[in-house]
Image 1: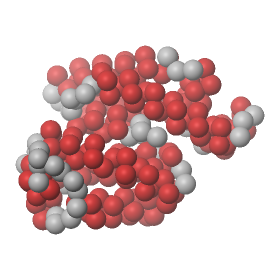
Image 2 (image 1 turned 90 degrees about the horizontal axis):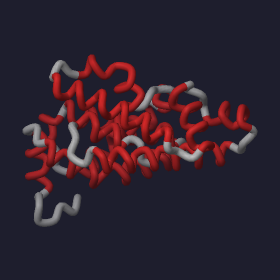
Image 3 (image 1 turned 30 degrees about the vertical axis):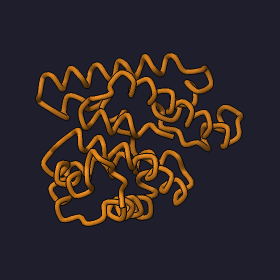
Length: 201
């Protein structure tokens, strides 16, 4: 069972999320994102797959939130979703863009709300600012991975580094970007919340 404490009982939390309460969703997201990332990483052995799967799980959870009223054990429910994404979509997930990349390319299509469009534009600008502040090697690895779409193996070969070194640079880059975005957008919309959380490494 999830340790909710005095703020929510598990059932109250799920009902609140099912009713579209973004604060409750944020609470659920922050309680599980790290655990799901670690779980998927153990299954897949890939930080990229884990990052993509976590964001996909939470986006689908929000999209299908009405079903949460029927859930008795959120822990089992989320880990089952995570396992299915890791095992059934391993190859596909490895080559998908992150939500951040999707926002950068398709931001205006996500919503017709003028205020949300402004937020999407702003977060893309903040993302670029965060990338520009990365250490040179982190920035190079991040750009090759997220912008040019190279695999970790391809990056290692191009830069003459080991795959583990490339992975460490990428994870650190994602952590640094996430930290800056999370500090800037502590109470942003669902899409931004998941985008920021997906950068966890």
